[in-house]
Every structure is written in C-alpha cells, then in structure tokens.
Image 1 (tube, helix red, strand yellow):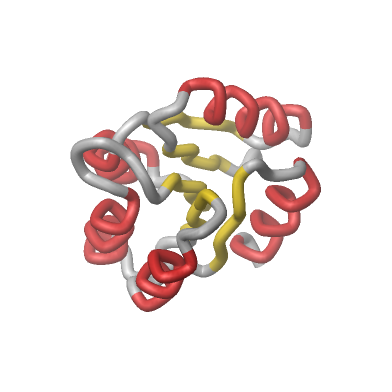
Image 2 (cartoon, one colour):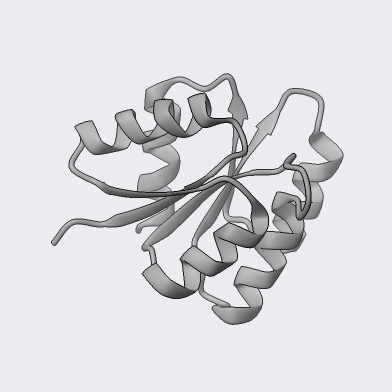
Length: 119
C-alpha cells in the first residue's frame, strides 16, 4: 500500500519540488499551503507523515504542528526550515517534531528524514 505524505509549504515551487521527489519514489502526496489547511488535510486524509514549513503567513508551522499533535499525539512530522532558524527548530522539537530539514534541501535528505519518520 502506498504511504501518504502531506507536504505543507506556502511556496508552491517548494511543494512541487518535494512532491516530485516523493512521487518518483512511489509515495502518494497531498499538499497544503497553510497551517490551517494542513490541519484540515491531516484530519480528512490521515497521512502517514507530514513535511511542514515553519514560516507561513496566517498560522505558522509551529502552531499547526501543535494542533496536529493535539489531534493525533503519534503524528509523524518533520519541519522544513530556512538557515538561521535554530531557536524555532528547538521549539518545534519540543512541540513534537521528529526531525527537521534545512532548505534548500537535497532529495536524499528528504528521503532520509521520511524513512526516519516512517520507522
């Protein structure tokens, strides 16, 4: 059975790039462009893992992470982060993120993070 991955990023090109990496490896990809959409899609689609940007307008990735973990304490989430956001990464890990990927990322890094999340 295909594993379902939710990609959350307000930048369409980042979602497309990530989706291409994952669909080429046989994953089923769902996309969301905001924290609120991420929560809605998490509830309706029950993905196996989530790759979520931290910085988004409206509800950011940290607050969306907290909301998703409230709905599902076992949610498997990795945060996508720009360089220089170390303090936010620490917050994300405290809030339940299992990994973080620094942008711009290499395909191998995304796949390593996913295999860690899906173990």
